[in-house]
Image (cartoon, rainbow, N blue to C red; front, side, top):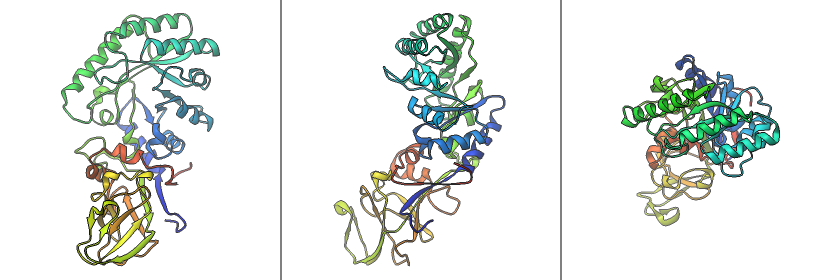
Length: 379
C-alpha cells in the first residue's frame, strides 16, 4: 500500500472479469447482464462495467438513466444497457438518444416513454415488468393486461418496440422457499399472456445472482447477476470459493496514531469500551462517513499485525480505534478491514454478520473519500 495513502479500496478487475466468465459458463445459452448500478456496487461504475464486458457480459444493468448515460459518455457503445428505475418526468429522451433500453412498470411510464420517442424520432426499446410477487416495482397481475395492450398499441404506432419481459425474485437466496415456485409460475403466465396477444420479446429475464447460480429454470434468455459479479456469495450457506467466485474488493488503511494507555481508560465516544489492562491503541482513519457502519462499534472485525481484532468502542465519523494489546505496531502500518479472506483477513460477509446486515450493503456503502486503486486490468 502506498505510504502516501491514508486508506483505499483495492479493486481487482481481473476478479470481476473472471467472475463474469465463470457465471457465463454456468448459464449455457442465456446471455449475461452484469448489474453495475450503485457505482458498480462500490467498485467503480465504469471500471466494473469494462471488466464485466471483458468477462463475457453482453448487457449492463443500471438503476437509473444517469448511470446509463455515464456509461455511454465514456464510449461504451456496443453493449445493451437497461435502466429500470424512474420517476415521473424522467430523462427519457436523453436515454433514447443514447440507445438505452428502458423499463415500463405502469401506464404513466409507458405514456412518457412514448411521448419521448415521438420527440426524438426514435423507437424506444422497452422492457415490460410484471410484479410476480416481490410487491415492489412492476405491474401487478390485475394491471398487466392493460399495460401489455397499451404497449401493443404503441408498437403498432411505431413509437416503441417491446424487447423484454421481466420480473424480480424475492427469496432466491433462500433455497426451497415456496415463493420461488409461485413467482416463477406467475412470471411464466404473464409471459405467455403477453406473447399470446402479440408481444415478441427478444429477451425474457428473471434471475438475480442467487437464481443465476442455483436455479437454472429461471435463466430464460438473460440472467442479471449483481453481487456475484463482484465475487461475493448471495447464498448464506455457500462461500464465494464454493461458487467459483473471487471477491474483488479489499478495504485497507494505515494507522494514523499508535499510543499506550493505562488500564481502566474509556475509549471513543460514550466510553463504550474500557481497557482491561495497560494496552496499545491504534487509530484507523476511516469512519461512518467513509462507509464503516456505526453498528460495527465494539463488533467490527479488522486484520492488523497478523491477526484479527475487534473495533474498540464507537465508530466515529472519520475514525475508529483498535486495541492492539502489546503487539509491536507503528503509525503507518497497514490494517485491513475486509478482503477475499485468503490471508486470514475478514471478509465483507464477516462484516455483514457482525453488524446485522448483508454484504451488498457493506461493499456498496464504501464512500468516495476512500480512493479506488485498480489492479488486474485496464480502467
